[in-house]
Image 1 (tube, helix red, strand yellow):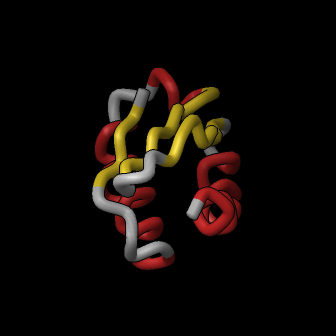
Image 2: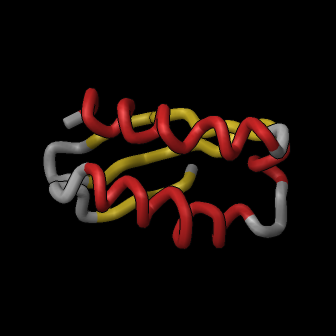
Image 3: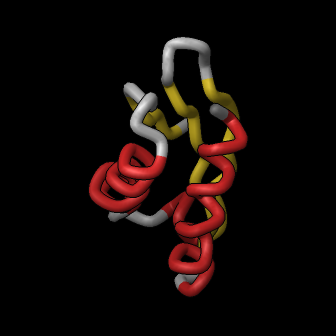
Length: 73
């Protein structure tokens, strides 16, 4: 599943990079929890939780339906 998540993140990264940010995959657990770290300007942006929930999580769950939860570290 980790490879699927990385592939999906590769589709998201250009949007984040356009705003000076990025996302790193920290871990994919056996029970479908994906742990991400927002970096660059995304790491300190006050809208980062909305970006995570409304953008990244939505796309990841569409691409990899086995995902149960997305957690930002």
